[in-house]
Length: 227
Image 1 (cartoon, rainbow, N blue to C red):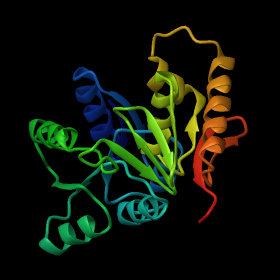
Image 2 (image 1 turned 180 degrees about the horizontal axis):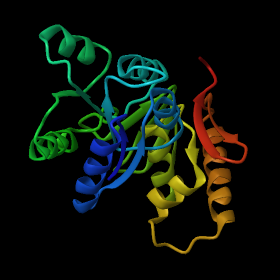
Image 3 (image 1 turned 180 degrees about the vertical axis):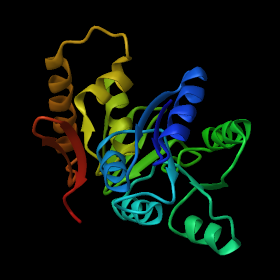
């Protein structure tokens, strides 16, 4: 599980990073709101732990702009502000959970486990992912747009699922390779380009207005060109 920790208290940040890594999580950290927002919108994370009081941009604005940018990643907000209205403001801005400092690490772990147990936001009970004019059946590997469908290979399906779970987010090449091929797989860089080409052909086959866009020097992003 890949977690982004945004916390300006560097000592607390390093302590949480150490504790979470001992639980076998992969942790990225940053200490200000602007950098955190950039990472949230350009990297693929399974969870964001976000402090409310941050330099450069406070946590509420970071979260609001991330949600306005269509970020679907679960967010746990940390704060020293524990009044009822503070919690309401955080949840209304898009937080999935809200923890008041100081807190026990065991409670944070319990809340992480709770979020992990939740079904993905974009998957319904029939295991269908949707974005724009597309729907993708993750069990049958069938991509559909309107009345046109096609079946994807296992690898194509894994790639399509990754993009549909992170729409409008730029996914770096390294992140894509790690999540689809695995962290220890020996994959030639051109292999990813070949599969992106295959997926683009699939999108044309079903006549979708969604496109896989190349972000030069970084990776790829799924966009709905109809919007």
